[in-house]
Image 1 (cartoon, rainbow, N blue to C red):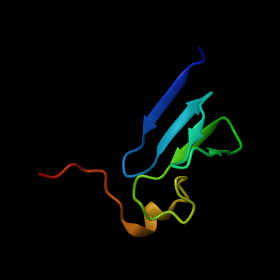
Image 2: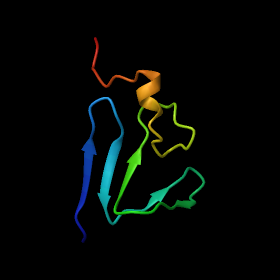
Image 3: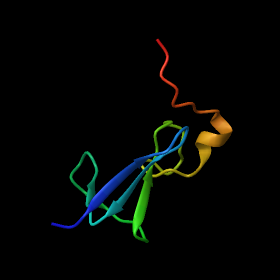
Length: 66
């Protein structure tokens, strides 16, 4: 089995590295280029589920409050 890592960026996306397959709700495989993929956490990306950097403009914070 290939190594897969998930990095949780502070105030940014999840970055997944390794041999993974991402499948949407309809079962369609999503593709990207490169050895890693950044997935949106803020919900504001125009290219969901992929991160497009909008979290910076949106002021997304990963701080846990409560």
